[in-house]
Image (cartoon, rainbow, N blue to C red; front, side, top):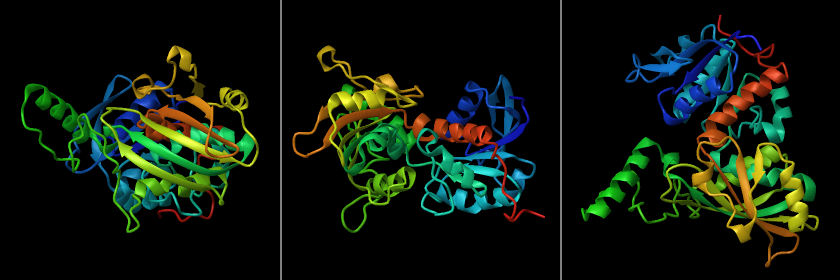
Length: 348
């Protein structure tokens, strides 16, 4: 492909923004001009792209004039404020926040699962929640083969999902404990070093966290399965990078370990690591920095009929965010729909 696209990254100085820039370069996405956008506080910084320094500009509506594609990871409030402005200027937006995920006219896409939904976009595409995306990489092919009806899952989410300050807090607490110093908390309500916290995102009145609702709500849209029932417990663990999920899925049709493995081995973007006798199963340490997700510990569930229990891991900064966004952009190009459709209001 020729380098013909003017691309912008909004939230360029954050962890996901940095991964977006690196992924655009690593996957040789056809960028002719790159605009990096962030808050006024970060404007003026320089970041590297293809060996050249690019100056970060302040995120404003006018910054999207002449931009073909924008990858957003600037938080929900900024996405709500600036993504429609970008679309109005003829820019296609792929947004990593939760701002538009449940909007019926905004495709919510994992390209390996429902890339065809991009045919209906109106200038704005949503990236799913990171834990949802990683879970569905294994669940979606099983659903296509056996018909998923309900899912019970527990996540093991890395601290980098909370940002750079959380990573620093874990590292600081480990060092303080090793040195016999008192542990201080800032990001999390409890010590995260050598601990696990069943608390990711804010609690709802019924005791469920917002993060725990996303697998069902977003999974229904991505799988085109409005009757899917899912219950999840989300847990923060003292791991730097890559999320893991323990999943029990019940199906309409019988499933065996062998038939599930056969399906999963052919699933794009997914590798099967499932040899318990050799202690071979996915771990977050092995998946950190990798594009693929990995699934293992496959076994027929002992409590439910037509059910399979498995373990899936993936890098939440990549497949759970930056990589998926770039893959959406690649799919838009491959389908020749990287444009704002006619009839969408544009900036005069």
